[in-house]
Length: 125
Image 1 (spheres, rainbow, N blue to C red):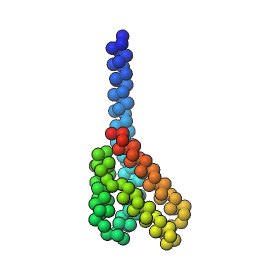
Image 2 (cartoon, helix red, strand yellow; image 1 turned 120 degrees about the vertical axis):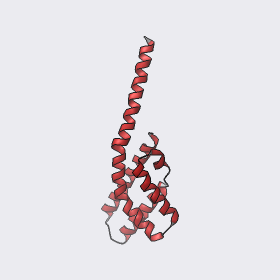
Image 3 (spheres, rainbow, N blue to C red; image 1 turned 60 degrees about the horizontal axis):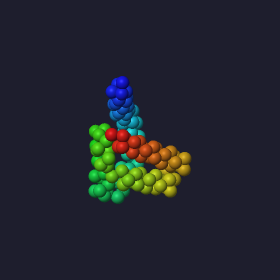
Image 4 (cartoon, helix red, strand yellow; image 1 turned 90 degrees about the vertical axis):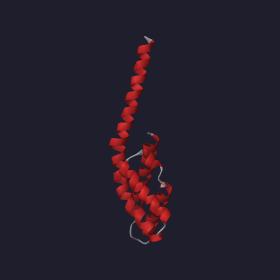
């Protein structure tokens, strides 16, 4: 009797693990890719103003990781550098009057949600 309950528990754990992997690749990854497509222009705009190879390499790594969808690739990106670049671009555009406070808040919220999704994606592998 105990053997059957142990097998049932193991089967439930296996099903949950598979469901998590499927959710990550079929739901979370496409959402992250879509969010990155909206975040990337601000990052690229900032990097173009500083012309720094470290930032350029991080941007290329981010693009490749979003394309591959591999959590290890995503984890290997210098995201903080890119997040800071995004914030610098938003702050610069806000100060120049190109965008208003509401748009700036929306752009920042998108980045926050993207960062949360990245953490979930990386740690749920």
